[in-house]
Image (cartoon, rainbow, N blue to C red; front, top):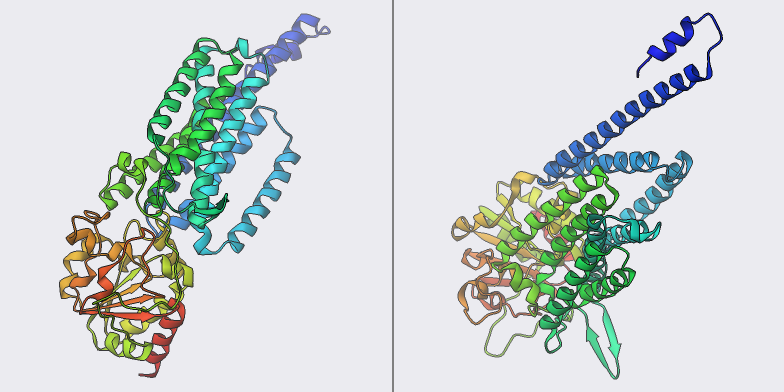
Amino acid sequence: MNSRPLLALLAQESPPTAHTLEAAELAVAHGGFGLLQFAETLAYFLAAVFFVFGLKMLSSPRTARRGNAIASLGMLIAIVVTLLDQHIVGPWTILAGFIVGGAIGAIVAVRVPMTGMPEMVALFNGSGGAASAVVAMAEYWRGDPGLLRADTGLTIGLSVLIGMVTLTGSLMAFGKLRGMKIKLGGGEIRLGNPLLFPGQHMANFAALGVVVILLGVLANSPASQWALVLAILLATLLGFTLTSPIGGADMPVVVSLLNSYSGLAACATGFVLENSGLIVSGSLVGASGLILTKIMCKAMDRSLLNVLAGGFGQDAPTTAGATTAREGLTVRKMDAEEAAMVLEASQSVVIVPGYGMAVAQAQHSVAQMADLLMKKGVSVKYGVHPVAGRMPGHMNVLLAEANVDYELLKDLELNNELPQTDVALVVGANDVVNPDARDNPQSQIYGMPIFDVDKCKTVMVCKRSLNPGFAGIENPLFFKENTTMLFGDAKQMINGIVEALKQS
């Protein structure tokens, strides 16, 4: 702050003039403004650093919890600074929002089961997209749209497009993950199944083309409110029609892609508001989501365009306790005590978890069983497929909750060890161990990398029934000579194995 006018004022023996007082006030005002601007810039810089380090830590289950806390702290700093800087609300309103929002988040975190996390993540993505779109629309209509710059009109249109597609696409994904049904006429539609109508993809491309033209109109003439309204309506519809053809098997990819969309929508809104914190956070989320989407597509050996085309996988209904063998095929069964004897007599065991483990909430029982086996000298490892479960990292989160050592978690490189492994214990997994992906060129999942558990000396599959997995495809692994089925609830079965191991 420039203090010279103040010093001159104090040094005067005569009363200060109005001109001198005005100069002093301007000096204080400009000096204070510079200090506040520096503090704001520094806060946004710290928030960006927290975002980067938080995302880095989220890449490993060992540091994921700490990374989540650090990234959340960065977001809190960015939000508070933005609200104070823009004089949107007062400190007490910020505190009230912090308390109410924190309470809602805490309640949801405690009450939502692990099996419901994929749906919750989908809703989080949709909420982020909706927030970005609403803020962009508010910025457009809070003044005279005709006074907006061309670049602002364009970014408002982009934010609305991406945000509304994210919102309605996430709602559709939520319905698919939830296995919801819609009654239409005299029939019933399962949202988990691919929903297609003739010419749907061409209609989507046409609608997207119209939206692009509308964005051009907004850039050329921001006062064209009709263009924004039409863009909102088309983007809302596109979210549903782009997600509806995608079947259950591709939902992990869709969740990560929608996560990326929410970040890109926030980034576009940051340009609308000229807010560096929102631009940085949005671009980081968007980029990391796209990278994760690419990893998920590689894990399924499918292109992103192929995923978006849809039609692969359905939410197949399950019938608990169905153990009837297919015609001409033999199913071998085993109880918990027999399974414990086989596991205890082995030298190496690989555990492959799947969504069924999440449904049964058996992760703690599986971890306890593994600890008992390791104390008896058995080598135990976990095979975690990138698309196991119904969202990216689903199995990693479950196993981390059960305090499983991260060093025991292996990816598809574990396939090199499976031919020498004594026992593969598959707990609730299906599609990620289906040998048709490797051996049957006519299969829908042919080419998708899987765990080659059928090459182990013994395979034990803990599953409620012989029904297909989320892809809706039958698994020939269940009928192989070296495979034994452990029918029943995964948690009860694993607990039975644990009790048998304790008594041996």
